[in-house]
Length: 192
Image 1 (cartoon, rainbow, N blue to C red):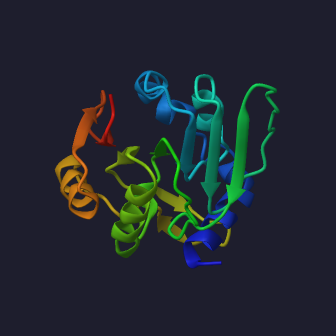
Image 2: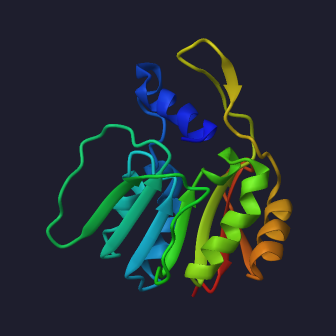
C-alpha cells in the first residue's frame, strides 16, 4: 500500500472523520451534464462513500468507483443499476478501455504532482472524456496519531489545471466556475 493509501485508510477509520469523502454535494452541479451525455459506463476515481455513484447511476446504468480506502457505508443494491466500489490505488489503476467517461470530485488535488501526468494519460487512453472537479484551497486535518496534515497536495488555479490536462492528454478543457472560486469543474475531452 502506498503512503497516500495508508493516509486515507487512517482517515476513514477515524470516527472524527466519519463524513469525510461524502461526495453528493461535490457533484450536484455537474450531474445534469453528465446525465444528458447518454453514458452507459462511468468510472469514478476517488469515490469515497460512493454517493456520486448512486447519484450518477440514476441515468447511467453502470458505475464503478475506485478509492484508496473504502469507508464503511450502507450500500444498496438497485436491480436496474450496476454499482460497484473497488479499493485500489487510483494513481495506478488497471484501466481497461471502454469507459464512456471518468469522473472525479475533489480528488485530484489530493494526489502527488508527480502522479498527475501519468494518470491523466492513462485516463485519456481509455475514455473520450472526463469531468474533474478540483478544489484550490488548503484542507488541513488532524490524523488519529496527532499529526496535522494538509490533504490538498496540489493547490493551483483553473488555468494551471487546463494547461496541465491539455498538455498530458491533448484534450480540450472547459472550466465550469462555481459560486465560490476555490472549487471548479474541468470538462475534459468530448462532452456534448
